Amino acid sequence: MKMYYVVNARLPNKKAYGIQIAKMCEAFIEAGVDFTLIIPRTRAARSSSTRDFYHLRVDIPTVTLPAPDWYDKGRIGYAISSLIFAKFLFYHFLYRRLRGERGYPASRIREALRRHGTLVRDYVPLENQYHHFFVLEKRTV
Image (cartoon, rainbow, N blue to C red):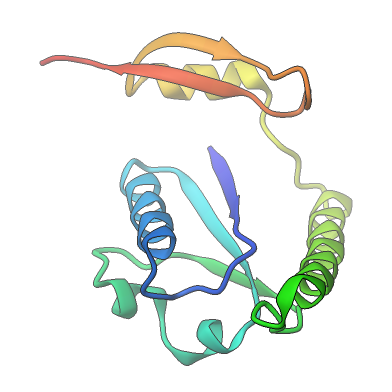
């Protein structure tokens, strides 16, 4: 299963959300997910590797997209940086789609998740029909 984790934040950093993102990435990779982290190109992204910074057991495949590093310039700077990042994110996925890469149907994702636990709930929020949320119950051995 292919998964993209899109994060509009400076990574790596020492804040709690940075640690949580890194540990989630590590868990997905160790669970066997074909995983890619997508972040904006900032000073922090250029300074060190995510694996070394967070002392992770695995490398995290990362794509850095162009965006000005104006996240500390107030609301306007953050908004401009976010819009430019979103634009390049759109082009990134459009390019992948034109090359023939497609997403997986929900049935294939459910099948892969059932190998790791019991699927308790599967729902789609009303606000966005393209998101699927799955609740798994861990198997007891």
